[in-house]
Image 1: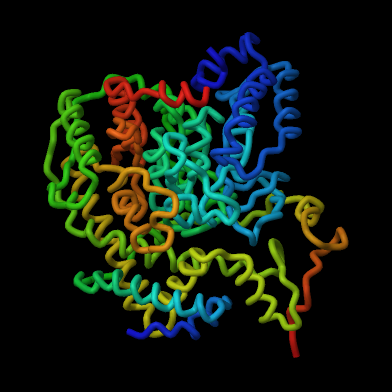
Image 2: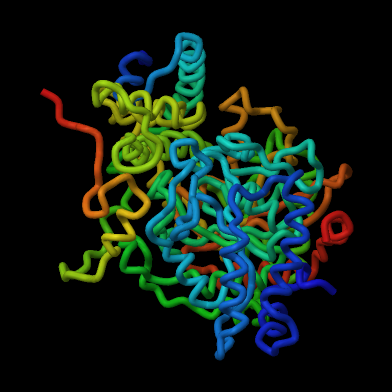
Length: 485
Length: 89
């Protein structure tokens, strides 16, 4: 048994008892990162000096305290880490050293975590394959010809290939759940407001949420215990009390009702994914769930709503990258030429595309027709879910319409790429928590994920059910252990 | 609906070369056509409601970031940010 395959609780307990040292744990992860990060390229930045310094500080501390004492965690590179380069996967922030850490990073460190490195992502989290990173694409550890999903592709790969026990991602329209599904791990997008966004580089502020990625529901729950809760630096963070998720997953699951959609909603999705979806529905019935057919009449519009609202917010959020205060600057004679050159050189194609679409949606003459309309339909989508959750406790959907696709397969066709988010964007629009669970492998040994959505702030029930399904599904990491551990 | 690529590029403060411009114009046309599906929905009432519920906090001074730390990762003289001239005649 190496430290690399342990869950957070076991790792922490061994470290606290002194049966392992933080240095030994880091040595073990470093060995794998040295060997496999060259080919999978999950990380953009690792500062081993800093990592070992932190390990030493924890090893020599008198009181070995904290819920994740000594546990390594990988952080998506759009979450600020004080003094440690944070790029958002963009040339425009290639050399950016944040003067402060995100609240989630502070909370993780307060509980004893070791930040092992910063993971690759689609530039500014805009993408579904991690191919939009300004630096390099990350590869899927199940099949290196395929993408790991995105935008939190690096965070998913680090966990799936045992380079880190867990990671943080961010999810604006599926950026945690889709790569979790493509890499065969668990990924939770919490309720909007459950986790502070202070220090998350903004993409679309009304949709963005930070969440955990791991190889077990228990580890997801442990990280949620640490990062959840109100933060006065994020006025949209909620004051709702935070339950002890890690304890409550063990509770007996009480009889529940779960919603399924009419099969016509799944036209065109991959057959093997559809079969896994049906299998999971059957399993949920066997474990005490009552299946209820629900109707979400505006679901079919969510992808259009999403691409208008997310790009509108992005065009506004990304206006701050002007070459004046921080980040890349391309010097020019006039100030407007400086802005133009800096932004044109600093942003990649997908980011430009989204800024243009957002600027258009917000521009005079089109605002009402685009942003206004999308915003009104978002309200209808939210109401559809409110109505559904009067009848059911959970809603089950596939996480993705297709299996992990080949590198280069969709990068030239934005609309095709956008359709990868078909099932994951609605929880963001309706602010709901949603988890992707690995349920099976396809014939070609590619992982399949299923998504379960619950009502707002019902993460505890969601994780409780996920824990029960995990025990019944027995999704195996043996193949990945054989390759990477 | 007309997508005026020149106008939108200018509003976005982004420049692209002619090839990219042609490509972007075509892609934007496709994306906008795809999005126009939304025209089917009839709307009564207002936009999304969550922004009305953001709580306010008391206006009290609090410890903020330390000046030296903020300045340390920027070009500057250790006291102020130094930026290019942004005011033109």
